[in-house]
Length: 626
Ligand code: ADP
Image (cartoon, rainbow, N blue to C red; front, side):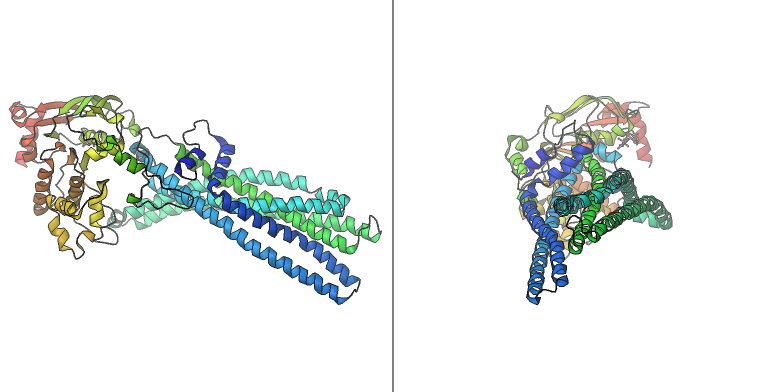
């Protein structure tokens, strides 16, 4: 019951009517549900430690009485011993209270972070066109931290304060109800102050987190593009940009600091006034021997009053923390609730993927289910067809990038996309990977609409080698097997690497396939990068392959090796290639000349070359001259 399925239900995922702070608050609390056992134990420790703390003033008063009455020393010893026992019990339970509450907070935030990250990765590509990665990362780390603080310290502290307030009030009333009422006269003023502070701090906290997010964005950009920054000597410019944004958050931080300072000052003042009131009124009663109040009981009343004031002050302070957390959680839940326009299969939780369950999570091997299902193993062998596809990028809705595009790529043959840059060639490749859905028309592979198949099935059947393939900071082996959802043998990996003309240079590394790529490993050349990406695509054995043949950045030797590998990739597959080489274009079964979002010309090399003043003819002529 504590597995993923449960958590999703708890989060009310997809519930459109969920809005407002009340709901956010309930959802923050509901995140703590899997921690209920731990929290219950923590709560019991809290009750014991609070109860023992509450006994202390009574013991004090008893002690004072014993001293004043100059009774036998034995009784004094007993009382002090009792006190030591109470202190010890209180400390032991405080230890467990503190550790357990924080522990459940850690468990909770770990799960919550993964949940938010999962939600981010589920979003369609258009989401990433608009959102900033630095800001998303900042949300993931700082907003979740605020929520953790709430659920752990805030909840545990409020419970502690609340217990103290209730018990304290009862004791005070028993001791002297009159004195209690007089003392409580300061409470309404404090409550109003706390409320004002709470709503102020909620607003400022949100601004504070937003500005931190935007600072994170600036930092992330500069760090990830450090080479560009360095080559233009723009370090101080980037620092200035970051500084300006940090300054914003600093300004909000200062506002928060002063609000907090004034708040605790007023709370303190209220407490002192209450003490003064008690001393004044109670003192008179003791002097006049009224209502049986002694100096010792006045003292214990006073200590309880200070307890109560502290607890009330704490409670109102926590209220503001809660408001800050609600501000942060609004943002988190907005991401979790966001319904992706393009459904991606739920991130698989399988041990094969190295899924390590967090405390309170169970393995839900949805990936294995997909792998077993006929849908996943279903091979898409057949033509790739665009049916009257029109498309504009969601971030730039006003510009139609493709207009009523229709074409058929024959199964097992090469289709070459050519044309001036900006025409829409990459967009066609993007749509085939279902990074976006067409605005009108549809795309089919082997007669099946892309929108009606699982994303795992689509990407198992459609391989891609892009212009600048991304390798991950892991071993070459892991990079090559990245795209497969099954166990692969060493032979298969070596075979794919050989096919991709990558095996020679890989075996040249001391660690071979286990060589680390990226930050703490080797830096590969552009050609090597591309050949590993080709091996990665080959290993997945896709029936459809999307290629971007830009080899202009490569040296002649590298280019030759890459081209050879690419030619091998295309054999027997339905290939759609953004073609730059005349040899590819010539041998293509069909050439599509894409210009300004439409197919301007289509046909074989022979057919298109014959057209006088045709776009293709001009294009080829220019290439020949170059
Ligand atoms: P080509 O591959 O033929 O050079 P593209 O398909 O990359 O052309 O681009 C076609 C048009 O779409 C261009 O005007 C480009 O500015 C625009 N475009 C490309 N990618 C995006 C994107 N992610 N968001 C908005 N517009 C884009």
